[in-house]
Amino acid sequence: MSLAVVGATSAVGAIAHARNRNINLRAALAFGPVGMLGSFLGSRVAAHFSAEAQLILFAIVMIAASGFMLRSSF
Image (cartoon, rainbow, N blue to C red):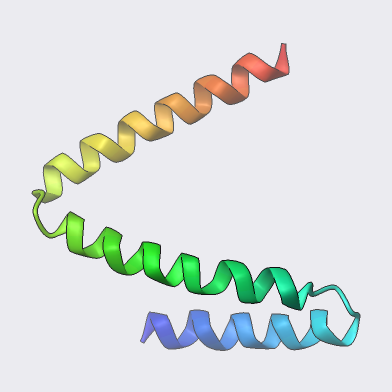
């Protein structure tokens, strides 16, 4: 159900941005398939790791991202 809500919301937002000519169709067509492939492959790789391992990796990535954000603000 949440996938349908996110998809519908994205479609409505995309229509509004298309009317205002804020969409670079060339970039969308280049990044869309790459993002879909990355999501597919990521889900395949994630199947080999426990939920705990995924959460730990996510926490490490978030700590690293916050460190980079704090470092660039000074």
